[in-house]
Image (cartoon, rainbow, N blue to C red; front, side, top):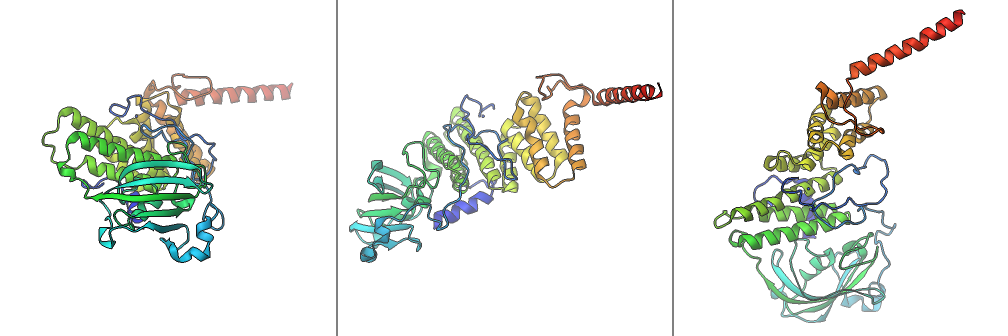
Amino acid sequence: MAAVGDAQEAAGGGAESPGRRRRTSLLDGGEDFEMLNDEEEEDDDDDGDLPPLEDTAAGKKAAVRKEGEDGTGSEQSPAAEDSSEGEEWLDVLGNGQLRKKVLAAGRGPDSRPRKGQTVRVRLKASLQDGSLVQEEPSLDFTLGDGDVIQALDLAVQLMELEEKALIYSDAKYAYGTLGNESDPAAPPAAALSLEVQLLEASDAPDLELLPPREKIALADRKRARGNACYQRGDYVFAVNSYGIALQITESGSGVGITAQEEEELLDVKVKCLNNMAAAQLKLEHHEAALRSCVSVLAHQPDNIKALFRKGKVLALQGEYAEAIRILKRALKLEPTNKEYHSGISKPIAQNRLSPGTRVTLHKLFLHYLCEGGSEVPCVNKLGPRYCINWKWLFGATAVAIGGVALSVVIAARN
């Protein structure tokens, strides 16, 4: 389970180390995609006010659902239940949910690929009823990078060159309880049977020597993989893929790279950092998310998504004054965005504060927005209006209340 360990380590590690491995100036290019669109419950884990990730296809919101009591998420395959053939199947993880059977022997144990190598396989993936899910005569991926489903990534490490194997995977190591809507399409909680033949295994290219154009393409593929994982709710693996993409963008000496290529690399890097922050927020890794946002702002100080997420993290950490300052800055850049206006409200409501403290914080937030006659539009049900001085508002309210009280007294005397 090396891939799982690496992904979990990356999820909490942020994105600050220079040699590490899913929209606003460079990010704003009409490439934004919609937030995952299921109904959100108002609970302590509500992250619905986050901005969308950087360019990925719109899809259902990835909310990790509970698996069944047996933890498999799907029925056992006939192969897993057949005790008469038990000796032919290798139980890869020891839990019966990922099994491998050799159909044609390979060149021997010494020919097995190593983690980090680029492999090429022939793949045919089917549901348990025989329905075809995916067929690839030649599929390339980096072993251990999470470029493919876990079942394939783990099982191929145990295959010999030219070996042909049948792999049974529970949904947990395939497309999970949510399935996959994009290509290849897989229904929710679907176990898969994979026919795999290992065709080639070679060392991955040296990133330092990789031409800039190839480096950009490779980093963008890793970022896209991170986006796909995010959409399915696999936030740990999303962070892993974004981290690998960052490592690619930060590699090399910069010799022979044009200004346009350098800008494209920075574009991919900033997108990965922004998306990594979103995934880290989902995982409640607040310090790591804050570091990712700071890294974005070091390159693009006015990046609206990084500012909003930084304000969100600070509010979750109880740093309300600093959070309000950051959110105010975001509002000045994009004053009509209701998501940013509500960004402070949910963190305040979700923290266990007294009603009086909550009211004070909300008033403080509104005071900051309307401070100094600012022309930042206020959010209200009547539409955009310029902010009203709160002293005048409270004064008018006091006068109105006093007038009503005086009328009552006069009426009583009469």
